[in-house]
Length: 120
Image 1 (spheres, one colour):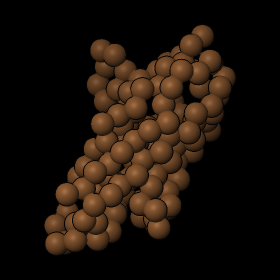
Image 2 (spheres, one colour):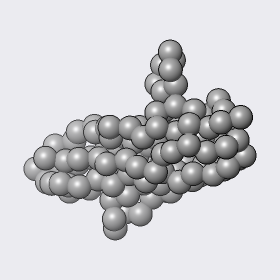
Image 3 (cartoon, helix red, strand yellow):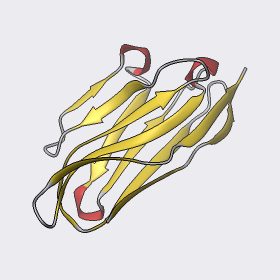
């Protein structure tokens, strides 16, 4: 059994910052890629940022230069530092991880989401 617990969302004014965290726990052998997605009301879920096990990153064009994804492999944790937030960043943010379980099966997991609201 594996769980992803994402946290750190909240209400912030435009121009402010938030830091999201996501911790993976359970019968984990290793974690490959991790990422953050978001879904705004009435819109499809979209990729925000992605990081490989080796630390290579990529970002949605809309967040480049403002958001930074990082991970702590020892803690099975991925972070999303969000600066210069805009009202259009308002969404539920979901953590995702490609996990190799202790029995060596590969599975894709999602967190339950954390709400980020940016006021103008």
